[in-house]
Length: 422
Ligand code: NIG
Ligand code: FE
Image (cartoon, rainbow, N blue to C red):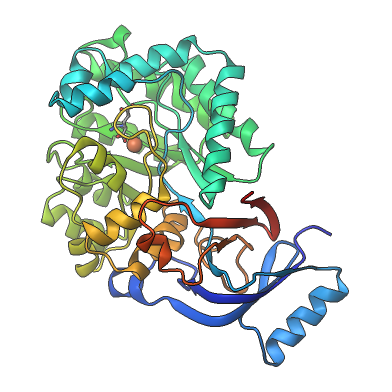
């Protein structure tokens, strides 16, 4: 049977614990075990802890009789598989020139207004064939797996018409069936105002709510709905109308909130009990407090702040105020063409003042919670799926310390080794 596994000789296992988001000080309370072992049956963890004692021997014995594969970790360190809870990984074309324009000082929103930015990727995605989107999406997932990402969220939002939006979601559904990384799909129809609706954001929301959302919902193509709530894109009223309609169709809510200016998206997320609000570079303290009270996860995207050369979101202050913080890549062709988990670890430690334990929790259990998956993913403990990584390092702290380097040696998904570094 697949997913029967015994891993011994783990030098250090580090994991958050629990079946829901860790908030505030809880984010630092991870479990660390030296000389550890993991046992999995049928793809789920049945034991994680010291590689000695009766509980281990019992679980290992049972797995053994079921024909478990035995793996010697040879003194490697181990953490849960990463959950990248915010990406835009299905898109056509590239925007390398915009990267250099921004480097020379042209603001992101100025490029957007001049028809570059999301509009440009929308044209390229509409022009791409389904095969091309499948191929580039597949290649990105392969890279993610090698970086230790075992679950990823993917958004539409580069079609901005019925056919292409559905196509982006269908591409993700197809890719989910052919490779090991779990994919959670988000509909982001209101990512930008398409050319056809220039200057008419409310008419575009009418179109999305009337023509696109119902198709997405009836075909079960997305679990979450998201919107780019931002000055010059979709304001608070447009955003509320769209999100309320999405919620009525059974979708869970996310927002791109307060990224460029302080518009109040974080407060809207709180008032609608969204699962997460993401970016939050400019969110007000009052709105963040409201998010905390409403249990909305604060998803910070440091690779985007780095790429846009903006001050990082105040993840330290959010955790100190008791919020649950998740960290994610925001991989997309414009504001952040990177899925570098290693760089996230380094930026979180060096510039966001997060401890290693807080960063690990933010990239695993809290990422899972931001996708409504904390009951089954995001930690190494009995009852969770056996998604974990063996690092080519003796201590888990090397994830941050070995700055910007990928030290993932082996990736296990549902108890099966799906990647091994050559
Ligand atoms: O999360 N801000 C809006 N959406 C993306 C960027 C998309 C793009 O530039 O293509 C983001 O940063
Ligand atoms: Fe994004």
